[in-house]
Image 1 (tube, rainbow, N blue to C red):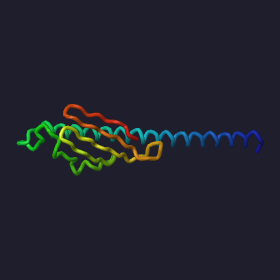
Image 2 (image 1 turned 135 degrees about the vertical axis):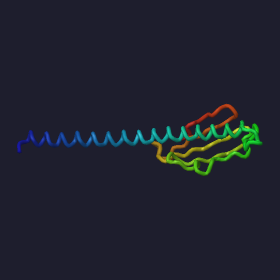
Image 3 (image 1 turned 180 degrees about the vertical axis):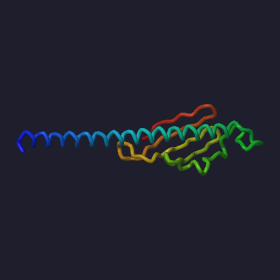
Image 4 (image 1 turned 90 degrees about the vertical axis):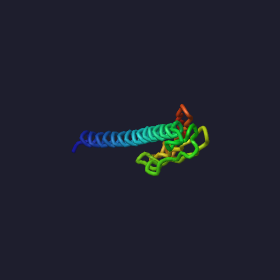
Length: 126
């Protein structure tokens, strides 16, 4: 084989190697982004459940304008997107969501939802 052919083979291997590395990085970035979206969606759904409990009269199994007594349903405290924990006060609920993927800094994805009687605010913690 001539030098030109060997050079083309080596160049081809390098280009394919770079393409594989770029593809893996894009896949990982997409997995993290998708997990973040899933955690935020779950937090919004749990927040809506808490608000529903807040607005429902006590005679119908609700809180009667208080969050006291609300908890995350057992089947929703762990989902495919992550794990969730709650802190309940009379007029506010704080829900912590921990994703299944690691953020770029190496820690698990972490978002916090603060739920009031009429608002749900989700903040990226990590």
